[in-house]
Amino acid sequence: MHDAKDTVEQHYEHGALLDAILNRLRESGKDLDRLSLQDLAPVDEFHIRGREATLELARRADIQPACRVLDVGCGLGGSARYLADAHHCHVTGIDLTQEYVDIANDLSRRVNLSERVSFKRASALDLPFPDNSFDVVWTEHVQMNIADKTRFYSEIARVLIPGGILLFHDVFSGNGLALHYPVPWAESAAISYLAAPSDIQDTLTSLGLVIEAWDDTSDRSLEWFAKATEKLKTLPAPPFGIGLLMGPTAREKFENMIGNLRERRFSVVQAVARKVS
Image (cartoon, rainbow, N blue to C red):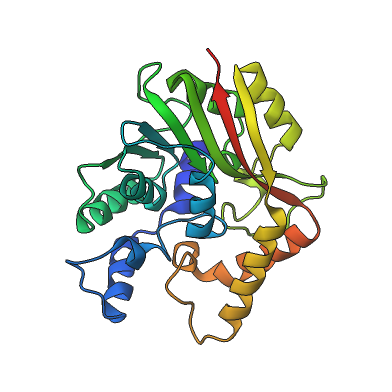
């Protein structure tokens, strides 16, 4: 029997994702030895609203070149590369899925950012770093696959320096109704753990994190999914984008996300919390 960690990793594994990404880039006329961050942006940020949401979240904090940033659940590394390039900081990314980590390192090399970003396989529940290691912890669309929210956020609080900030863009429960599955993070309820926003606020406060901003972005998320789904309907095949990561059920997942958001079965939040001691 596989434990939950193995099941989550299996959900995200593709097996030949790097080849698929590079082939699509090559087919679109890109030089694989001269790739830019913009070339990768459609596919390397596996979260709602992609680069648009990353830009919003980054604007919520003053990330300086000297900042040490940890991206928890970094996926293919798109957000980490953006932060390193735009803010000239060093970013360390961790992810449970080895395939994602390998791709993140490969793509970073191809855009000449290997000196500013690094990626390793690790669990968000057991971060392999000493206390007070990072000025900023960043996480997007990760904790909905994690049942133990207290352990998740306590590990983040532990590695943050006093005065350091947590920036997150994540998915939480809505009105209490069950989700329509599949969704991008789960084929079924077996690995989907959505907590109430108020419970997460209480958890953060109990761990010594002061919430400085809390913005429900569910409406923006619904609009984004609706536009993306309409675009999918007009194309003979899915475009180069995060649908590549979701496999053959991508269209169904997009449609379910629209239904879930319209019916407020889940909510999407961007937030900032600061460690006070």
